[in-house]
Length: 214
Image (cartoon, rainbow, N blue to C red; front, side):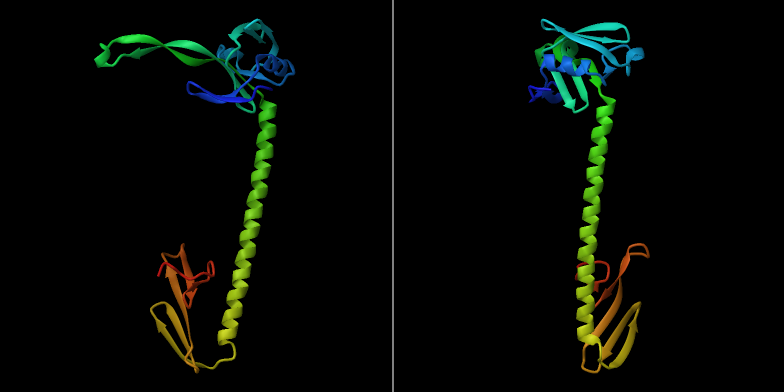
């Protein structure tokens, strides 16, 4: 569909479509009526579309509908709305004398959607989202493993081979002191059982970063 000019018409936002191209797309098949017609005709396929001057003609379920062709909006890749001017009742402000009067507004005269196109696009989007989520999880796992290895290497360098000189338990925390004066504290941090974690010398074993909650 051509004439991809994005417009805001009333409360409707989308790309303004050329009427002739829209007719060609409808006649190519796959579109069903979704609004602006009796409910018993909704979800029935569009069987024919044509353009006569400024009038758009669409046939659905043996019924023909004549519509304006100047405001055809592609609101998403699989939904098109044909808009028209409608009169709405609106109450005047008291400063203007109050009372009700009619004002022009924008409404949907007809709407179609393409279920197969919708399914295809959603499937592509879902697959893209799945791949992006898998990639995010892969990166996070790789970063976590790198931090874990770095943490283990630092503990190994600082404490392996040293002689343990003293052990103390304070509350639920375990404190170890070695013969050279170095200390290793293993502490329970966080809230209850479901969101608790363990800190080793102030480093969280959950993310291998300094525990900023203490």
